Image 1 (cartoon, rainbow, N blue to C red):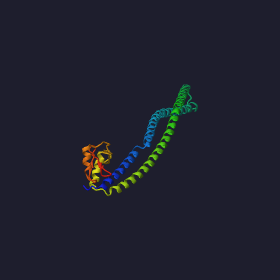
Image 2: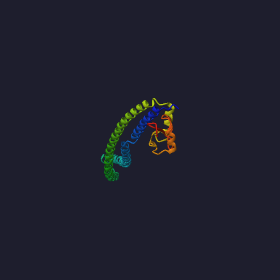
Image 3: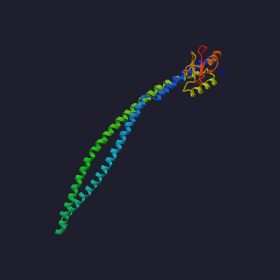
Image 4: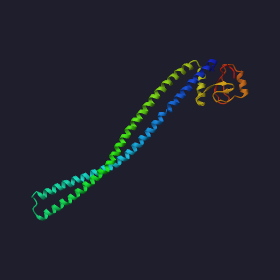
Length: 246
């Protein structure tokens, strides 16, 4: 494996850009606006569920109103037809005239009952119409609020994506001079160690896991050349000695 002191220093720069990119991706995934959007969408869902219940109730009332109005129209047509017979002169027998008169009166009573029933239904329907209208207004306001939050999320994502692009470019530049096998080892260690594959060795302590290395291991590292590839005895990360000593 081709390892140089410069390559190890460059690896620290790569790590810095990878860490910055990870932080940017975390910020992107946990934008506070996302929680706001979830809350608004929850209120939208609740309003839509409430509207569905009101619409179902209104539908039942509307169907009852339609049946009553249809029956009322039938009765009114029957009244008109019976009155035409009663007063048209085609019926002259007293008994038949009396029967027609009684039928007109019965139809009149039925018509009055139906008219009262229609008025009751209209009275019952009025608050349902008002509730649905209010819910429609509320949903429209929530849709607008959700759209505003989505716009804010898109704007924040675009800004973070621009920063990520800068980090990616700087990372490529820093990695250009690092041997491929060393970079591959770094990537494996980074994947296994919560995003950190290389760390500085300071005062006998690994900056990655923040644990002190055993004295025997420090003595061994002290006798290695500055470009030697050494690893933390605890976490396995690549260790870089800025000045060539533990």
